[in-house]
Amino acid sequence: MKFLDNLLIIKNIADTEDGFAVTLTTEPDNVIYKAHFPGNPITPGACLIQTAGEILQQRLGKRLFLKSSKNIKFLNTLIPAKDREVTFSYTKIEEGEAEYKTQVVVSDPNTVYTKMSLTYSYE
Image (cartoon, rainbow, N blue to C red; front, side, top):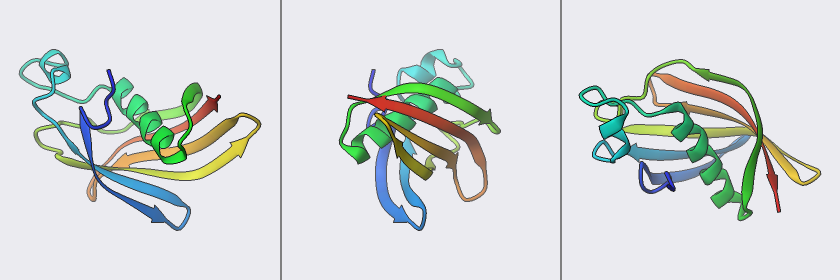
């Protein structure tokens, strides 16, 4: 299942001084929230990681594959009905030999939900 434009919908994309930021809205009626967790839905961490990759893949125009992750910190719970708008901020985007490394912070103006360092290989 593709999460970008399904679980989280792109609202805005902007370049930043050291990368780019994508603002998205949550889709609280998505089927994932019926299972995770019924009556008290939250956005699964794996979905945030996958969405981060889908956004970067779209931005770079290359098919990416998650190679490694480190320092993934889930700091707060993203509740789709309450936290309707979040931003994925990308910094330290580095291209290496057939790979990209980046740092991603998922937040809104009041809360940081996730911080992660991700490495992707590409074809």
